Amino acid sequence: MYTLIHKETIFHYFGDDNEMAVQMVEIIMETNLKDLMNLPTVFAQKDFKKIKTRCHKGKSTMSYLGALQVRKLLEEIEKDPKNMYPLHKDQLHHYLQILERELQNFLDEQKG
Image (cartoon, rainbow, N blue to C red; front, side):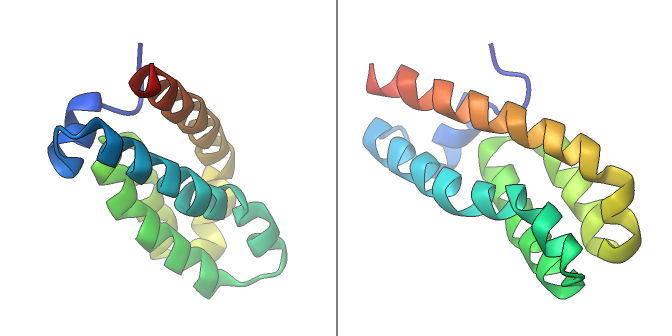
């Protein structure tokens, strides 16, 4: 059902408390995911430091979700945002769309 996130990893980090897991995933969607989805605008502004910061923050978030493919991509972009973001932006955007869908499915599933 999930291709990027892993429910077991989410519960490992946030405990077996459904309510806590739901709250944390909601926060991730409202903050980290939105920040990453906004990277095209940040890149257009040539704010490479902000891209680096958002990728750095996003790495730990992806670990909490078990989305290690996305974490690896963020690591690559973080190393050299000016040159690596353009190379990986399409793949990152694709992953972020999948993540958003999977996280929403996770929330719907947990809320019953």
